[in-house]
Image (tube, rainbow, N blue to C red; front, side, top):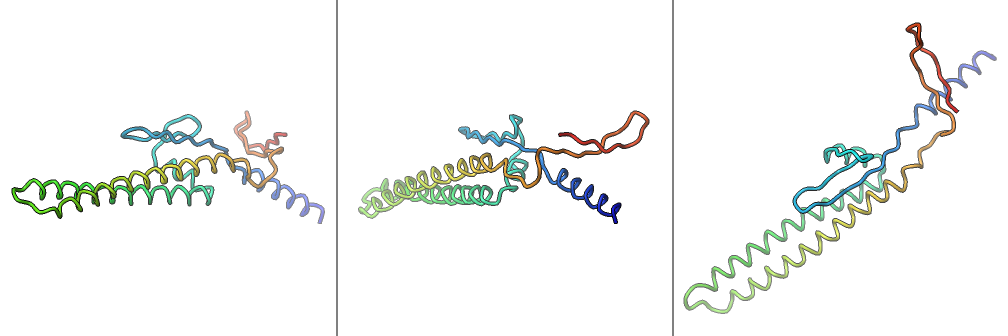
Length: 163
């Protein structure tokens, strides 16, 4: 019974030490044409950044909301640009009636609304990265003890405890 208890204790400690994951700090830098995604100061792809962000459910939820708002704003900006262009083309004809001014105003309103939605989406993405970095240390497990398997000089494997 005593040996079984020792084996179960070692198994429990091993599980706790392997449950701890490396803590990363995420940084999102928005550029004019491209964005930089950094994990611990090293540039990574967007998919790797989002994979790491997915470890925190609330953060990835905000990130996805920000992405959705970005794509909605792009669609609105495209529609607004189309209305402005169509209104200009319609108004430039000889003897055109005044109905083209409504298209110009509606297109302009859509473009301004798209900029506002894009801005809100960007703030959601920034909030997601801040939330992830704030919650980074809340990993279950005992962080004062680390148990790992290391190679020995004779070519074997040893159990190493770090306090």
